[in-house]
Length: 319
Image: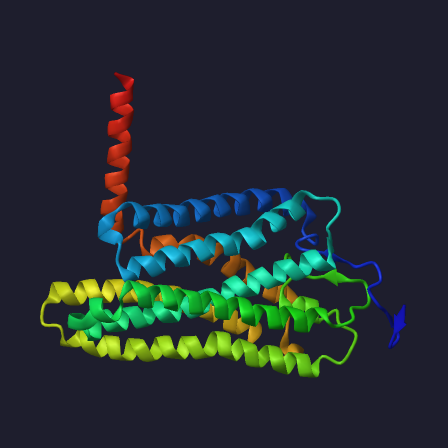
């Protein structure tokens, strides 16, 4: 079917180009990213298990951290296995429904993570700036409510954006110059006027990225002011260590996402975007456990306890 001088997508399929321009390195890339993926999953699964197993870690901070790791696990599973398959597959076709589902969960989980990082900054703000009322304010009920709002907001926003993108007619070769169904490369294939769609995507990204990021920065202005007032140097060091780790994670996550999504379509460079996307879908999720919690003394203590129990159990079983 011809539409505005192009051919509409009557086959209902896209072709995911991925890294087909590097055929000599695809096996090497497969091995590298498979190893990174396994490290990522093991790191986040460790956090989930540790924060569930040790009662010392049953606090609001680790409750949110556990859910952040759970989101990261799902987030990488939405993207990385398909990317790894395409390194080895001869056919890189992906149906429109499959592409839409991948985009939906990618946006939903990524947006939920953005909102959750803002909630975690609020948790640190209350803990440091209002410590005497911390347990009263950050009650279990409030934590659960915040988590529900975070996830519901991410999935509702994602539903609107995905529906907005996939109502468009797609034309030309149907080749997605990316390794997953992200908004910019899919939007490039639309053969109708996408100006209104770009504006709506831009507004949604402002809501999901800039607003939480500004709230995080605002929280840390108050946090830094409170930390500087702590007279005990050990207390200052501990507070700074916890908050600095969270701030590094937030800057990595928001920095990459803002670079990709909050700019006009005319300035997109799909090849450059693929590299940045590799960072925030493969590299940063792998680094988060090391940056955020595996350096934490409380998590290390919980890990030693679990490993100690396992060693003791194995010794008992050997007799």
